[in-house]
Length: 330
Image (cartoon, rainbow, N blue to C red; front, side, top):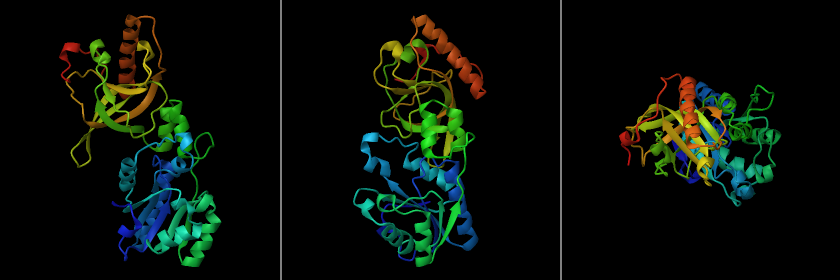
């Protein structure tokens, strides 16, 4: 996939093309349907396939007070769109000046003059241009004016009858419903970040953890303990090692913690040294809420049970606590 971050970087003879537009946060099953249609049309007509998106997310620019969380980072979005066969990704810097463009100004400068669009693939709820004043009818009118065909892809609906959307997925993640989020994403939810030093409490108790840095890509799900996978990325060829894990998200009330952390204990492993490594955390299922226990023994008993449940959920052998003296990471 070719990434363009400036319209001026795109060759003058680019295209002609099939284009879609959106934020594509999460690259969920609705996005997958749209992008797959773009790729299909491009292959059918011998055209270039393109997705146009924005960074930062427009919500972060217009409503910074809402602390908008993105489901996944831009690198992950490009990876999953590339897996669908998309050839080109145009990621435009979004600010208040950019937002002043009328629907026609935006379409003419990007779709017509730069990407030479023959087809524009969108959902029927598309909004674009200044104050989101452009809609599907606007796009169709501009298509007639500038010579591109508008292809509409129907929305996908969730099991509860709601529209498949990034907003709905964030709601599910915030409540810890990993299974519900996975159904809409088309895969388990992923976070990505660097492993950093923590307080080493888990190591002392026989449950050494990989602690993710504060600068994490992806929505941190609701507090609780989860079964999932720690994914190590090997080389530049896309190879990965999946390690079964019990994952803790929250402030650790047992020790009067105040800062939310994400910590993953790789089941039964004492020989891993992950400090400084960028890893992904894949959430499969929430197995219990975050809570405080009457004693350390009660906590340890529950953590032993967490390991057993995590192993069952992930379909791996049941581990035991590790010997703190055997932990090799320092």
